[in-house]
Length: 128
Picture 1 (cartoon, rainbow, N blue to C red):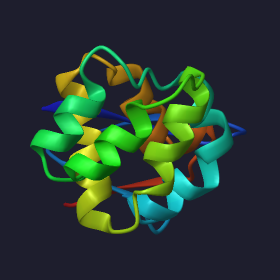
Picture 2: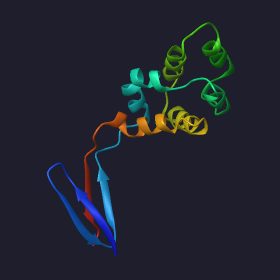
Picture 3: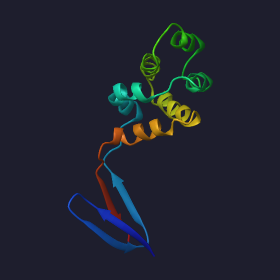
Picture 4: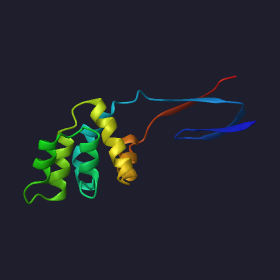
């Protein structure tokens, strides 16, 4: 038997069952999460050390966009802003998360997928 812990703001209960179904509030799309977190993300993304190259490889950026972001004397947050501005589809956002993982920026990926550290409402149901 497995234990499932059901937690809410006011109490914590342990219930024993063979399986559980965990439901969360409707998941926002990755693009809407990135858009909502853009200002905070620009400060924590490291666009250098492989991220831009990985985005180019994954075809999120084309060569012209890559060169434009790399050109000039821009601060890291400005390059990050430029990358975030180019994420316009869910497919690009999924590839962006993969690029973060590939460039050892898992903490940024977690920040996005955990809604910027915001509380999520969970409900747990016993399936028996």
